[in-house]
Image 1 (cartoon, rainbow, N blue to C red):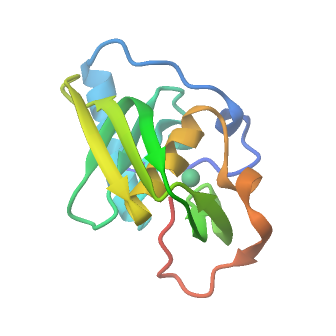
Image 2 (image 1 turned 120 degrees about the vertical axis):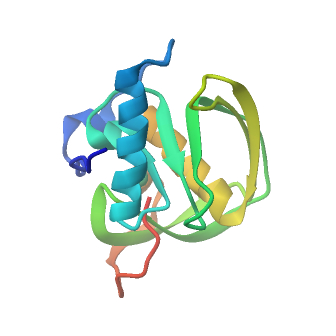
Length: 160
Ligand code: ZN
């Protein structure tokens, strides 16, 4: 496993649409392991493959620090409600802004063994799912920010 370099806003790779994963292989397994390690090392709650320069539809999310999800080719199939709150991104270091997201989402994805599963999330998990899936289509939260980007007040902010 290895820590990978996190790409930052302005890097063209963050604006690209990622490709579906069609098979699991050692290279992709390594990528997933590295993404988890890189996310934890950066104190993030989520990381998408394009953030480490790989244009594959893979995200990892862990909003509690002990409950990691690997989502391959994820699709949101249901969403409801609304939440507005502070959001950050490992690709936009040191900044946060308010973003409105659904308060509930249901996502269908493949796990690391390419088995289909459903994941439901509310609050921070729903926010993280929406944020990470946006990365797969080349979008950053700053496009949805309500008001200016603000400096992070402490280093304890959750970043995605
Ligand atoms: Zn992000």
